[in-house]
Length: 594
Image 1 (cartoon, rainbow, N blue to C red):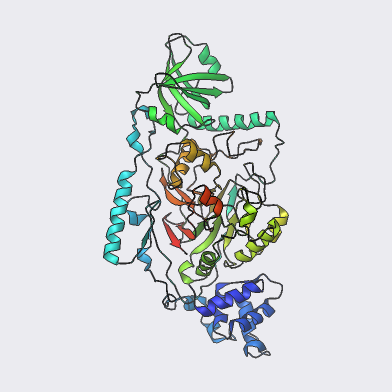
Image 2: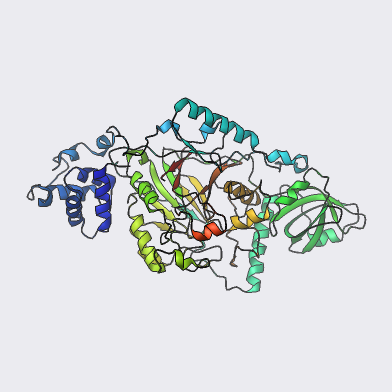
């Protein structure tokens, strides 16, 4: 946490509707009473949203803080002694101890991916060995995607570190991470100046769907064409119509969307695949090495199969199957300088259970030198609690009007440094359409949240920061994936594993007709055309991360304590955690603010 003078000054400025640059807080904090300093700064800032260092120097020269109102500061003759030193020197001051009741943890005891002794850590593990091989899937076995070795190694390393350091780092039981509180420093840091993010695959302003049947057909046609394009290098596709006319015993290969999955009386599996010409049944024998992959299948995802037609030509005996998948050879991009991004989601302002203290600690930490490299804040949806999202929600609301909720969220956002680049996508609690892809917030809501000049984009969107592509998706489909797949492949305790499945299927919401609502568009915005470097989701209120074929998958938890509704459905949220991503290495540290 910052010094008390910094904290009180920031609170005083926030109460007046202002945010402040770090250097401004540093200059003003020791000048006198925080209320007086805030008043002088507000007078100097006028109609501006952010109190800058120039405003702070003007306030220091003014009569409220005992300065000479006749004097004018120049670059050569600063009006305040600290101004001559410059922000870098101020930021270089030695850190102080944490406030009473908190422990200061050395930076080298924070959990990073490298600490766990494997390329992927934290909530997870490297899924570099999935059940599907790059070329010949039939040689794979169910043990191929076992992560026990990585998890065990990480746990042993973690235990050794705790015994040697005596840090008292808290172990996260559900995902295996060490998560510690950030250390504290006394001074704020200078200005950030990050380049603007680039945004792709945003439906905002491009939505054309009206809900007609033909539009849904067009969406699935586009899905098939694009995912089939990823698979055509693996198989020599024949249309279903052509396969139906082939003689029995012929070799056949097909790409299609999963239309049906059913078991036979003998325990084998029949998977109906559909392409643009029709459907064709494919039989997967229970004794084949890849048969357990049937448990991973979801309706409407795209698959490729290779096999032999039965004697009567009416069914294909499958010899191998392939998912679109992320290539094992994927090499992620990294930034060419040391810069960080904070990945958070599910703020839920307006709820009685909004974790106010944790949020304040996080926002205050962002003003410290320890967070100097954090130049981006990527928020994955559910800014507010919303209204009428689940039964009896009104009984758990602290703010009952949806617009008042966004006004309150805007005030909370003002506590974040004004010189950060902020990107926000909506979630299912936000005041946008529920059907995915979701367009960005309306102009009215953007105006309410305009203090930081944040960038608003749709759900999902690909956001490129410092050359690193981050696929941002709120994550509603994770509920469906977790419900449909075996627990070892997808669970709420390990949400990143469910994300691995979406990467394997190259689609963020493959199954249609369940809880995930899909809007028909000219293109399927939910297809993962480009392999991202980072996949960021929220929604399930659980923290977890790991790497799948070199893609870092992060579910960032939430900022809402357990509600009565969550108790009724057995959800124990992970709140008050901020994953901090090094964009130059793609290593990640989770910081705890509760």
